[in-house]
Every structure is written in structure tokens, then in C-alpha cells.
Length: 247
Ligand SMILES: NC(=O)c1ccc(NCc2cccc(O)c2)nc1
Image 1 (spheres, rainbow, N blue to C red):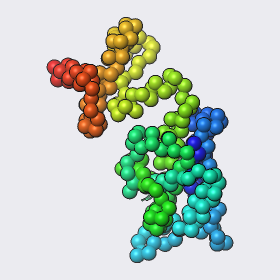
Image 2: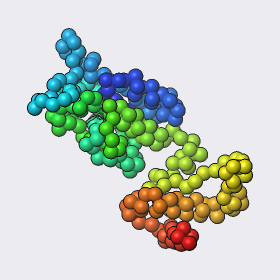
Image 3: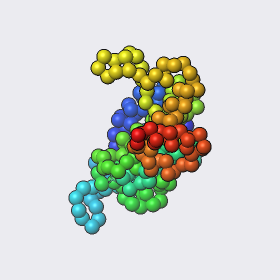
Image 4: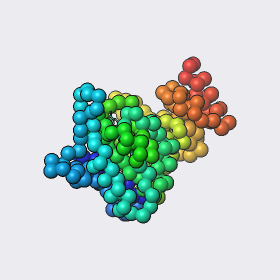
């Protein structure tokens, strides 16, 4: 998969994508991340990329033409069609479901706004979808781009080893993850580890983990439960958790 990023701070995006699982995915050519700076496509002597907002008001707006020229260069760089995403607080909330959809695409382009954002006409004519990583305002879209690169990059076939991909199973089925423990078995300050995890009974361990995921989701993010039907076994486990919890 190829990801092209339009940003006034290309180093930030490139360096964050060079680390860890995503960095390795790039080395193994499972993923390609290219960055494009709109300033390189500005045609005036001062390499201007922003302009004052019509209607007045504080701040600056990113100009259409440097972004449009960068997108043209991106489209030209490889044959596959490009799905263009703009990161902004006005976008649809990014979810794991959306990440999985993006991870299956051959190419996406991520436009990172700075200042007060970009001229609306660029969004209207060049952007396929506007996405937000959360309900807060950042100084630029680059952190959103880094989030998408990470979430999509780790899903590329071969990016994660078996242990790592097993870890991803928890949230990817729409539930919160269960608790995790490691040595020491008995901590002098914080006590012990749930007995079932030391039992070696893998069926019981699987059941306990599923019950914890369901119970935690019910306690912390009940909204996630309304978005998915539960099979009979999960329904029974959650009922058991809820009975024990209120006891
Ligand atoms: N929640 C997000 O995904 C997000 C994305 C970008 C951003 N800042 C740049 C920007 C871009 C557009 C309009 C705007 O008002 C600010 N801040 C937060």
C-alpha cells in the first residue's frame, strides 16, 4: 500500500512513519510512505502557501493552488487511483472499521491542514472524505496523518507477527481489551494475578478474557455495545459479569 502525505512539516510525518512496526513494514515494502511539501509547489518568489481569509477574522487559510499542484504530482507518481483524505475536526470520526477499509486500498493521500485549514473549494473538488481523529483541535493535521499511517500500516499483510496480530483481535471486534499481567506472580505492593491465568486451562483463560472484555466495554464504553449484536455465549458471559459486578 502506498500513502502520500501533503504537509508543511514532511520530516515529522516521515520520521514518525520510520519507527517500529510501521518503519519495518516500509523496509519490507509492505507499505510506502511519501511526503510532499506544498511549499515546493508554490509559484511565487516567497513560496507562499497561505492567504488571508475572505470575510476577515484571525488566522490564515491554506491556498488552493500549491495543494492542488501537490495532489496532481501525487496522482502522476503512480498509476493506481488515489483516495484523498483531509484531516480536520470537521471530519467523520476515525474508527477501526474505517481503518480496516482504508488498509485495503492500494493508495491513499492524506492532506494535513495548518493554520485555520484549507480553502473549502479544495475540499469540495479534490477531497474524497474528511476524517477526524477526535474531538479536539491540533495545530495541524500531521498527528492525524501519523495515526492513520500507524493504524493502516500495522494491518498490512505481514506487518505483524502472530503474537502481535493476536493482540489486535481484541479491539478489532469492537470490544475493549481485557486486562494483561506479567511477572511477578505476587507483587509485594499490588498483590497477585487472577488465578485462572496461572491455571494452564486455556479454555477457561479464553472465557475469562472474553468476559473481561465484555464487562469492561459495558462499564467504560457501553456505546460500543449498542453497535454490535452479541452471540449467545457473549451475552451469557456479560450477564455473569454484570451479576458479579453489582453483587
Ligand atoms: N481532530 C483532528 O483530526 C484534527 C485535524 C486537524 C487539526 N488541525 C488542523 C486543522 C485543519 C482543518 C481545520 C482546522 O480547524 C484545523 N486539528 C485536529
